Image (cartoon, rainbow, N blue to C red; front, top):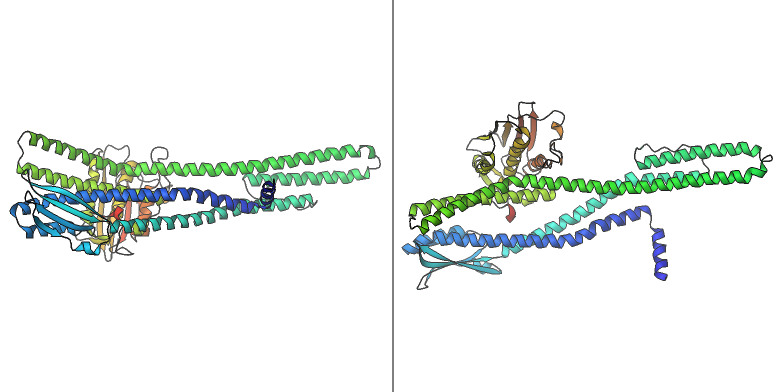
Length: 537
């Protein structure tokens, strides 16, 4: 009983503003408390899976490149060949032994003395012409993995805390502006009405529920004023109608009670409408984000699936030749080249998917999450065009590059590749939709310390009434048809916030669109990045 009394006393002293603050704080912190450990655990599992895949790939590479030096018994060549793998800072030890005598052939373990571990070792047989001639053991240290996980944890927690405080601040700011202040003003006006001050009108120039509530109060004020005016007239007749005075007072009291009940009902309607509006806005934002993720990930994952199916077909063909005893060295070499090219395309497509996932998690782009290096613009776009070719060949559209070979950039090739992919997808989905043929062209010209990249298509163009809105988040003409409205918004954020450039769009209806991108040859910001999600191979 005492606890109920204390709780009732505390609840009676909680103001509207304090109640809103408590609701916002608990509504944001409680989900974050459960979601942060889950996401951190997911990040660690994914990072360890990638580390294991890299370990398996590196030991497979060693078993292939050391086959010939081990067969020729040339440790010097074997040491030189193994340096390709040993250059990876995660590698602690490379050890090769000969079989069947199990003698040590080469061993690189200098770096292990400076690494803390823990260490994981994986072994593979080395074959030459179908004969097992040795074994290679590769040991990796998890120093960099642990540091990356700690960095991801600090960055995620910092982002969550900052997002929490910013969300609380802006939500309270909007509520203060749109709800608390108007309600306080209406309470003051209601107190004024209760005190009988009926001369000043009640005005709240708004079209929402609070505006209607203010109009109801104004109508009440006018009704009360008329009622009091009538009462003054009736006071002169009080002596004559003293017998009916009590009934008339009761009637007026009932009218006032009815008005008060209407006001309470209106206030309840306001609160219900506010809650429903917040729920609808959250659901709309979630729906747009899910559609955007599906739209953006479709192309790179589809390309990876096509490359994987091609590699499967080549492997099946090689098996048939092995089982039939028709295998030749040239067939094995051709398969190895095909497998290596396919692996590169698969890695590039999966890295692009990782880029897209990172972009959709925070919409805005974080410069510290990208791999920076020096690269040739033409070579990078040619590789990306080859990746996109598998999806473009299913359409009647063509993509052409006209870029000088001497343009070198010190920038972020992964993010620049995402910009190029978004522009191509935007042209295919929007500009060239419904056409029997179409052409896309990307050109580049060096202008001092900058490079001007121009991407054009000969599609139907962008209508003048929406061209100024195409870079807004969630703006799309394909809403409900798979369009998320995030592609060009992400493109704009990457170019302006990370690459340090600018983008301008122009269009003539039925004559195509033109995107002009001005980028510095040396991107702003730090030159080093350790994020394995965006590491370019």
